Length: 138
Image (tube, rainbow, N blue to C red; front, side):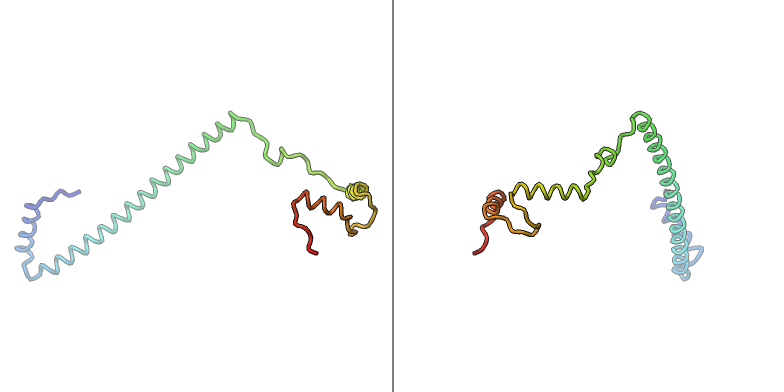
């Protein structure tokens, strides 16, 4: 920002020593340092505020572009059905269906009995062979 060379800086130091004097020079340098620190804080705060405003403006511009592109895409392409709409309606199971399935299972095994009745040995071996189950313990 300020283009101060070595010769100009030397001239400023000589003038400051002559005008202020060597005795008051440390106090003057501390005061100048404090003022420079305050100016840097203020300029940093100002710069951060400007950067935040620029970012917000860029975000608003990008959101506007995205919204326009989304509208163009939605107009160009038809609305596709959702996954739930594509699924067939759920099958309704009634108590009569459950009873008929149990009756078919009993008819297929050839034994009429209660639901908790044991299966014949041949049917148990067939299940073990089908599912590769280990043999029952003795």
